[in-house]
Length: 131
Image (cartoon, rainbow, N blue to C red):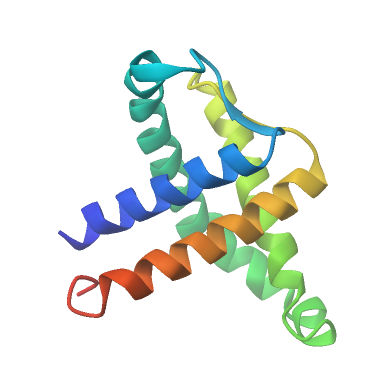
């Protein structure tokens, strides 16, 4: 249940980021039920890829970046999250999923939105569901 909650939360955050930024997009229909039908599976797959990238690459990148994280009082973590989103976009595009992140600053904005939405949804769900 915890994995499913995490997957849906991440998918919601990705959908909000794609809605807020033109540079983050899923290919396919853009209106109505056809959009939901054609983008739901890619959205869940991209959420899964983002989770895998964050679980494998992000810890190594954080260790290597400790001096920058300390120097910027943690703000460099936003750059790391943006890099994870960019890498996710690159991998998803390579796998033919149809998810694109255009540019560094779009990735930074998307990473901030994803972090905020994930935080809000986690607070709304409460501690019992996250176990």
